[in-house]
Amino acid sequence: MGGMFRLDGKVALVTGGSRGIGRACSEVLAAQGATVIVNYVKGEAAAREVAAGIGASGGIADISGFDVADSKAVDAAIDAMTKKHGKIDVLVANAGISIDGLLLRVRDEDLDALWATNVRGALACARAASRGMMRSRWGRIVFMSSVVADMGNAGQTAYAATKAALLGAARSIAREYASRNITANVIAPGYIDTDMTAGMTAQAREYVMKAVPLGRTGSPKDIAAACAYLASEEAGYVTGQEIRVNGGMQM
Image 1 (cartoon, helix red, strand yellow):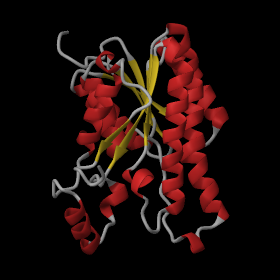
Image 2: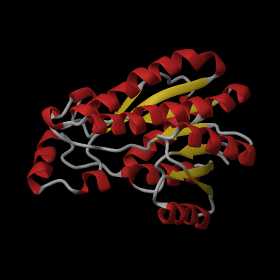
Image 3: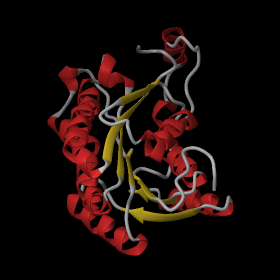
């Protein structure tokens, strides 16, 4: 197949791939020719629906249920999918949770939960997936951060801290693995229409429209397009970078 950013013959794992941004990434990577493994933690029915939709469109998809916050489960699942599919070429570490609250009200258990999924979970997946990437001397690691990692946001101190941590992680991984032809990059979405932002008040939405030069929220497909680029052969000279997809909200 011709065309740019093709992923024929590649195997991609998308964590939190059953809804929102993860779902869009799963669908777009599959449309580019990758075999996509859709990870979910609770939404098995949703993951099956995504995989069935990919199959109906002529793509190849598999599902894998595990919690990224459980490192043993991550290792076992990635081991199993590597045996089944031969390798993992692309990891999109997208699984994340959001617990909002002013700093004075943030509890230790909130900090622990955010860290376990958003940071330790992403790193556990990268650690496990990178083993096979090192053997095949080709790999793409994509972390999903957030515009708040750079800008900050009142009421999101703990969440922003976890999303900022991914920037330092990706840049370090980029340096560690460059000699093996493995890149590590970060996508920082702005306000994207997903379940996470669905609860926004009309007032908050109006504030966003004023803060975003393009005057609209983004769609999950806007993020998935950046993901397809970073996963591709053509992005082989891009590593340790943060791609901001935010309508100009932060420049």
